[in-house]
Length: 497
Ligand code: NAD
Image (cartoon, rainbow, N blue to C red; front, side, top):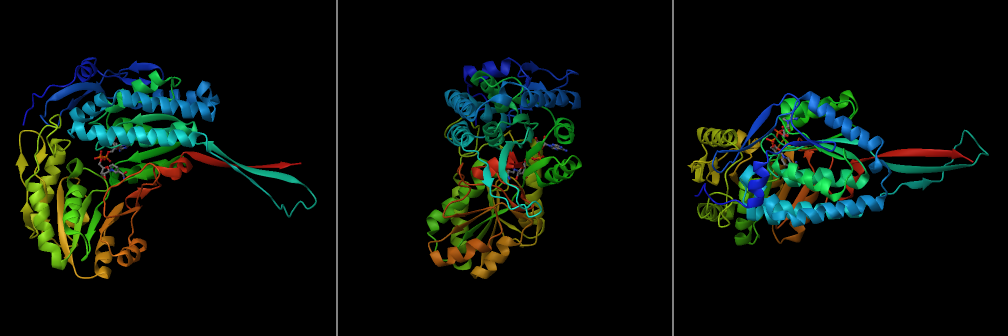
């Protein structure tokens, strides 16, 4: 593993110019000058510092967004203008895609090559998909009866209007993509945004902010405040001038944000944690199921909200499938994400690494057997891809989100049993079924309590498909037409003729 892999001159220049945050048209420091360190998870070294904002900085950003929404050229922009600007922004992201991918790698630890084709490309595709929606936001007209005013004539219609100032708070696992999931529908509908990236990973959001200005968006349409959740995040959550909160992160923080939103009846969307099942039926193509199950849990170091972190395999294939997954895991190359031959990078932080090891230890104490992994690797925050067997469905390693490369595997005997086990979770984000038995698959789909069900694939996302959770995995949906609904209000209008 090399901590000394060269980084691109553009990334070097970006880091060296001490990234500041964007409020209105101004690149600014925190008012009190506070800074926080960003670390490279592959080496543990400090990459650079960014402002650590407090409530006063967040207030400035919200006011800039408020002013841009209420009274700026943006408030008068036509749907076609919003479409063209979003398309321009996507083009600029495409131009700077390699830089964005490398910043994501340096700041998050993930593979730059994977970030280029996944995180950055999905972000670009999503903005272009949302650009199309800008010209297709419609109301409707209604033929009203008005029984209390017989003989009168009315014209009734319903307008769909932008919700206003959006406070967006995101997690560190897909920093750029999560920001695009918020920004796309907000800008398509005509909202303005204050984004609070995760404490650990603000770099790609700051680069995105540069591109937003270059694309020609008026000042204040997109603002980025860097800082901690307890300071900047909480200040944004409680700000009375924010019309909508959109949050991606843990269920614990999501609950706090949801409760706080109700103080001002702020609209709120919550994309939270998961513990998604991968289900391998008796007839499945076992090679593809084992490879798919390994990818479902180990992609992005297991730091994926809908990662397939619980594996249920029909008993007659259980040992073989687990052995195949362990073989794949043992063959994975761990290392610095700048190296294109690396399969798995480090976790985001020493804290996350410790949290994952604590869960592995807890599993072991409760009788789990380690089929592979369970160990540290290198000087960065690495955890070897791990599979635990002999686990109890009710145990913490099966019920709680570990958010690392740890798979818990259990056998089942029949469909009713596996549906019960799959649904025996506080979460409900995603699930995959591996089978070619159409009848079994179709009988299972309606019974699975999760926002997405994939068949013979896992974590397969498309801009046109709504994504979000049942149960503790959240409230509301991102992507698809559903996202437009969450960034708009309905207004009923009745005109007496
Ligand atoms: P986290 O909840 O700790 O932090 C997420 C964001 O919330 C960060 O920006 C953080 O600064 C901020 N925050 C923290 N405390 C806050 C507070 N009191 N008030 C306001 N903001 C606060 O989550 P994380 O550890 O960064 O991310 C991992 C979690 O995110 C996992 O549970 C994962 O499943 C979830 N996630 C969900 C989705 C989805 O679409 N459902 C996608 C990615 C990640």
